[in-house]
Image (cartoon, rainbow, N blue to C red; front, side, top):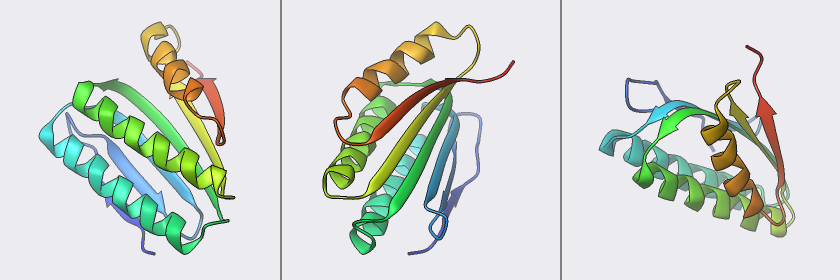
Length: 128
């Protein structure tokens, strides 16, 4: 499985997937058709990676500033994919980063984290 990289734009998050390291970073703002397409491609890429390494390790970091409802649906699909992989034996860890004082992003992270039954989840307030 190869790496995947989407450079951040004004309305699309930066996405960096490093296959050999088993890491995925999604950071920035996500509120366009371009963002939804990038997230969908990322979901497919992660599924392929997990299919190749069903008992491997994957560490996922979300560091989003803002996202809209279509991006939220893609994030939920990714979270479901990650949780299913963890249920199947993969070591999946999800970290949801938020800026100090950004209670709405912290609450959104908590909501996503509550839906994970098998993947490890942490809510991380970033240093100011």
